[in-house]
Length: 374
DNA sequence: AACTCGGGGAT
DNA sequence: ATCCCAGAGTT
Image 1 (cartoon, rainbow, N blue to C red):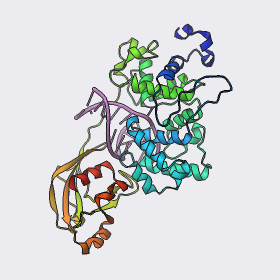
Image 2: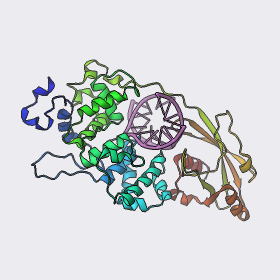
Image 3: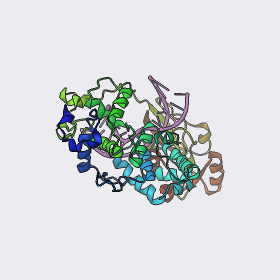
């Protein structure tokens, strides 16, 4: 067996011989761990009296929320910005939701920002500003699901929680050559992942698995020759690692179309309004638009039509959301100084010049519309 | 279990 | 173009 080849002196932390990943993965992590803004260096197993350096729970939580379905490269700048604006969870709890949404703008999945703000308030006001140190309590927090609860417990508190994200799913599916497709095979993956989670250095192990998936065991063209756990990998033995995990086919994205209505005054101000608190782009700022339908031609909005003399602008703005493509045709109308207030009232919005855009909670699709037209 | 919910980088 | 990303919440 593989584990019997290790010197006994290195085995004390991994006496359960069913642990075949951690003993090889952690030494690799000690050498190859990525430097990330929210991460402290790997815990070195030094003398017994040595203090382990765990990352700050607030930092771990903030980064994990941002990292949900979002790449490390994208998150870095947002993480540093949030930490600069709100150094502590109490600071974030006291912020206005609109400020949080503005700082989050462009990162996507805006329900995360709303839940982030609510969670900060729960921690600050009900938990004395201290994050729970166990999965069950973490799971109750807004925006914290099974993955994030395990990740915080492991990384911030070194609890032996089974951390299973897309990277870990891929590594486990390949290591055990699991050929059933996701999401059906998820339960089996979680069971195996839990069985491999070590009692020691659990936080490092979790991050090592994710680093491995991100840099070696990649979705395509995995670098098996460089892999620290290549020896026990059934997927590699069978020559099918790159094909795993299998996934159910995805649905085709329909195309939705709409008219965006750009009210402009003589000085270049634009009329913007806030979207409903829930649903797509919830709570974000938008250019008023008609309905977003799937018909071959976009639908005019009777109410907005009557508020100005509209002219169609050249070209269309294209944007792809998670589950549909979006094509926006742009309409523009000049608004006189005397009617600005009245129209703003009817539309339910307010006037803004281009210099103010960066301070507004504008999602990317709305920035595209504004930068094309303004 | 299926669906909603952004945006960008890699290929 | 497609895939996938340190997934969660709702139905």
